[in-house]
Length: 115
Length: 115
Picture 1 (tube, rainbow over the protein chains, first blue to last red):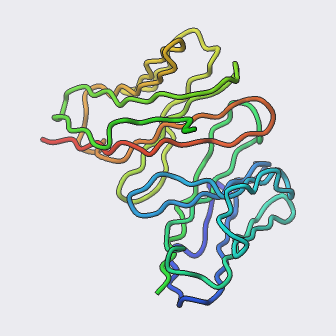
Picture 2 (cartoon, rainbow over the protein chains, first blue to last red; picture 1 turned 180 degrees about the horizontal axis):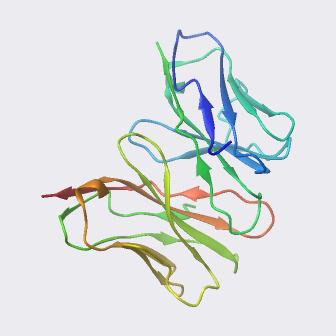
């Protein structure tokens, strides 16, 4: 596609429920990244995919968080048993390569609210 | 250790004036890239400008220029002739080029442009 697409744009969920956030990167971009941005804060790195594998998932806050990428394209970030502290904007970005001086193109994010 | 430091939580500037947003970084990798992103209230992350560590000249993109001082490890963003639409959060980021690496972001600077 022309840009990075994320869905849903907004998600309100009850504490304890599972949620899935989807990211569709720019076609041909091999690298995909998930970040989290809490209200008024900077970007917190969660996980990085190169193709379908995740060389760096050091930013996942707990084992309730998992992510996968299939076909070198779409990625899904899953949060199990959501907690109120999971409320944030989840941003996905893609890049032509996972190395070198390539910048990221970001999606518009998914605003997650846990009530 | 924090790799990207933005010491100005907020900055004010009058329309048509120039403003400098500070960014210092820390890396032992001789090859790296520095990026600036703009995040307006809509939440999207907009790429502004890029500087490579081996670039001899400071990067410029329209009204944006990057004041790169390698020995000081600083990469300040200069916005000339500020416009009301420049009011936004600005993030400095760095990517090291040794192998796979991710963009590390600073905490951001909120810029407000007044008429």
